[in-house]
Length: 359
Image (cartoon, rainbow, N blue to C red; front, side):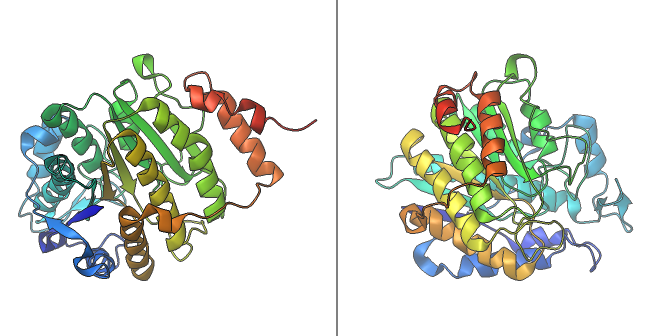
């Protein structure tokens, strides 16, 4: 298995206030995590996404508004969490370019004897950025731009995005919620951010009905709870959808040591989830998986989690573990999700009898 990473110190040009959670120290932690793999992983070059690539997702006037902040002597505030600095525009283009480059890397090596995966270590993150709005530390929606690029440049007919960041990927959902060629699955802490969306009954709109899957997590969810939701719902949906590529919005702010949320996920848990998704990718799309860094604000937890995901990408079998039996509440949540998504996805529908409450 070949795994490649996209990184550049130029991400640090997005130089926010030293007290802001999304600061350049995150990139240093990400690099520390990747460095633990040594020469077992490769590298791919990172270049800025083009305006044309960005504008396949974002409105041109919005892109121009972000571009106008280049070189600004003072921060340009977009919301209470999100401000652009003089180097933000270029860093955001590079972050999107890292995601695009990851897609190009896995397809460039498609004829190699071993399947390839990529991890784009870009910052700022992107999954909250909407068509015409910066929010939640995000400016350009890198994973959405990469998904559209895979369709435009590589002829993908179906692309899946799995978002495991602790916050709902509202920008990604809204980019594709009316389309059938891009599946969006998000697990996130219920009503954390943004608190107005990501509810389990949101399943897409219009032609895209059924192609959005939200998996809200309870307060203090554990590895087992996170993994069970993805094992019971995400994996069979991906098998039915049979994408040409799986993209992962890989945020690590659900880690137990991350103070921005209230979850109990471990680095090993992220590795196990990565292994689950890579296993599906091996079966349905020749292993093609691109991880795109989103959140994660505890430096040690971020480094540990990135290292675990890269290990899992190299050898998914090394993360195989049995899950403990679910509790009654957890089983009821899974049964409810199976009932909701079963009509659209045959493999989920086939789980109805095994998840039906007793009695």
